[in-house]
Length: 149
Image 1 (cartoon, helix red, strand yellow):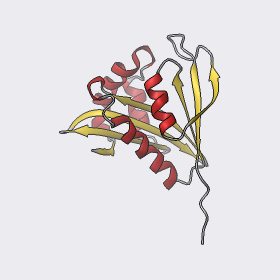
Image 2 (image 1 turned 180 degrees about the horizontal axis):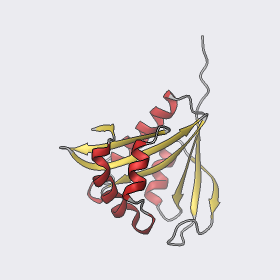
Image 3 (image 1 turned 120 degrees about the horizontal axis):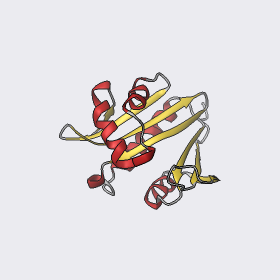
C-alpha cells in the first residue's frame, strides 16, 4: 500500500535512510522537515503497517525533483520502488510539473534501470557528488504537455 507520510513515520524513515544511504543518509531532523514541508510530497510504502519504502518529491513551479526513493533491502526488486516512483510522477502531473529531475549514484545500476523504465534519461554527470566518491548521474523526465479541448 502507498500512502502519504506523516510525522509518526519519521523514526521508521530515518532508520530506512541509514540502511539505504549510509553516510549520505538524512538526519531525523532532515527527514521530519521533508515530511512537513509544504512544497514536498512524501509517500510511504507499507505492508502490514510496516514501512517497506518511502519516496519524496520537491515540486516548485513547473519543475520537480525526486529527492529520495528508498526501499528496505528485503523488499527490493519486488515492485515497491516502481510503485513509489509512480506515486511521485502522478503527483507531479497533478501539480502541472513539466520536468522532473533526480540524481542517482552512477554505480546504482538497479535504480538507474528503475528510472529509465519510468521514462527518465541521463542528461549530465556530477563527478564525486557523493561522500563515497561516486559520481551522480542527473536524470530528467519531461511531461507531455496537456492539450485542452
